[in-house]
Figure 1: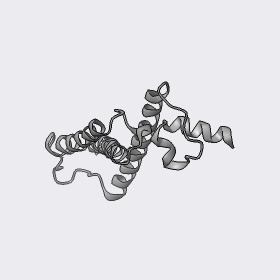
Figure 2: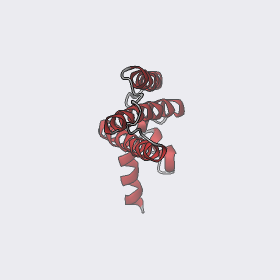
Figure 3: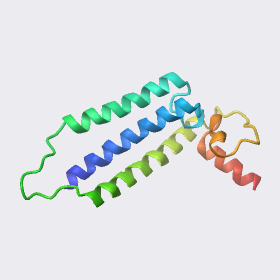
Length: 132
């Protein structure tokens, strides 16, 4: 069961990172893109999602023999939540570190997700806290 849970966690993590990249590229949120241009970032996101699905569903026989424990619904929800949270957190952290030196001075009126159009997540949070 633990082996399948770890594989499922990696699968969801990679797929969620891909979805975040595709969504950030579609929305033009440069602060969340690993690649600062929209089309390559969208292609990266699509490749991550498709690659994760291909790997997870073709790499290993996950049908357990009779009587072996399986990843049940509640466990699946827990692993999904952990993996999705890790994907959001790591995407915010990595993109903030990548954009640390390239950030322009943002429009002070931009708040919420709009602040991520030109700056990383950590920069947006720190500027928000400094303003009060």
